[in-house]
Image (cartoon, rainbow, N blue to C red; front, side, top):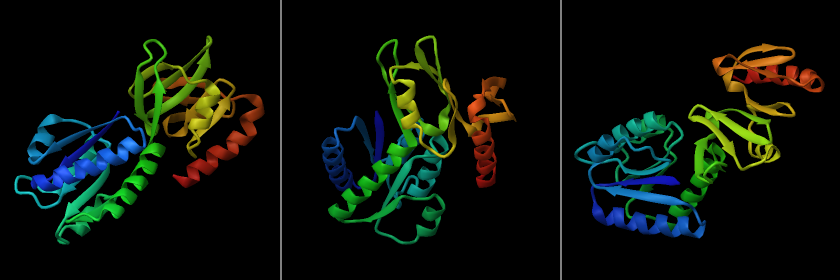
Length: 233
């Protein structure tokens, strides 16, 4: 489920934003939940993690810039929209890689366009899957996937959040994980190179010293890919 935050000390703008966001998300048949508040301190105290946030910059208790910094510490991939009638904070907001600014009153066409761009970014940043044992739906950052393993007639997604036996097939994971830092090193393994701690021509070592073989027919191509990856870092 996508968690969305609206934080603005003017209730009329909270209500207006909520209506438009609900309309947009429902048109996409998205699984979402919107939290609204006029008090940014309640967000700080909640420790909630959000994927999308609309923050008023000018608030009495805590300004939107400070709140955005806290939210990004919890989820570095959060999409942040700043809602403002002022230009004083734009330099600081750009340092936080704000997704877009919206001026009050809202331009609805620009709002929907911004939401569309935000969803494209979020779709690329997260993967959705079903856990085999209880058919529970999960969403996790692509960056948190360490590797995918096929074995014993099941597919396991190994992540920084734990290991999950998924309903998705290995070939489906190959299609999902098309990012430039994933590589299918073996018929049974897809590896996130960000987590590689050691490399030999015939095998990789990832987090916790897990050994992953490199298929002999893939070794030459992977060798080239690995050093190209290192140059990009």
